Image 1 (cartoon, rainbow, N blue to C red):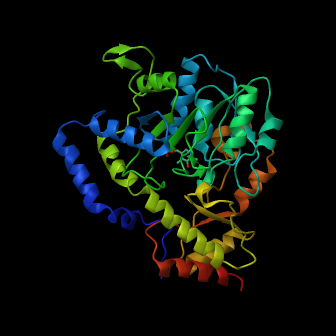
Image 2: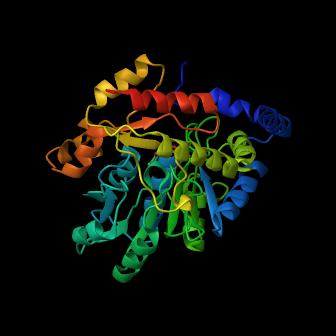
Length: 368
Ligand SMILES: *Cc1c(COP(=O)(O)O)cnc(C)c1O
């Protein structure tokens, strides 16, 4: 049996009729940029999360970058200000910071949750700290109640990187509503995935909403009048139409992912494999099911030989990347150890029970 890491064709085939009808609707409309589909999706996603606003942009990286840019335009932050970011994040969170001439302060995550906690954040605060950028990695929401309280105490802005955590919640309050803004990606492999690139920012701040709405469209509030030197970062009508279909199924997608995670959590008994832990189901949407194993290369090779495809998220932390030479000297042992040992097992709504069983059987038979 072959179990692919993520079978997007099979995943989207579940919704093929609806997706094709939505695509046809856009084709027939004759309107392809910033029209009714984008407005409707922005409304529907804001309602799903529970924010006042949602602004569609071209991708998740732009959602992060433009939010920081908007805070600069609003005079809330300035070049050289420090942004606290987990050191073990995907590079996009850091690129958004450096692109804005802000300074990333890499903070070690909790080894249990892979996310920032308030103890490590507090130790990193300086007079130049202006923003906390928590990343809800692998689908587990960060302790936002505590992080928000800390941010309020110190007068800091909070930008949540929600690219992996659509729908994850604490006390029923979802990711993207705790901070001043939430940045989402709809890259095809994300839990809410478009059939191309896409992203949004969620916020309930009217001023931020207004600046972002202009920045994504050349800095223009009214046609051919440019208040800012903005960018072209718009969500397409056709992707918005795809996302409206898939948003209707997001809760089912999350439930199925939780079922796979529960099966793995119960069924994987190999003592060489360290499984993820979480407190409440609502906090985790299992974008990824990440285990840790000392002999990672051998483990991945063994699984591959037995038909199970795995991926490492991520092999090299941002501060060790060639593009960030200025940070290569940093020593972040927890992050580096995480990067040496993590492996993601297949997980999605498209997996059959036989596939789930096969993955568990193979994981359990490694070195046994
Ligand atoms: C995917 C991802 C992004 C970037 O999203 P894109 O749409 O690919 O630009 C940002 N942060 C995290 C944590 C991600 O996983």
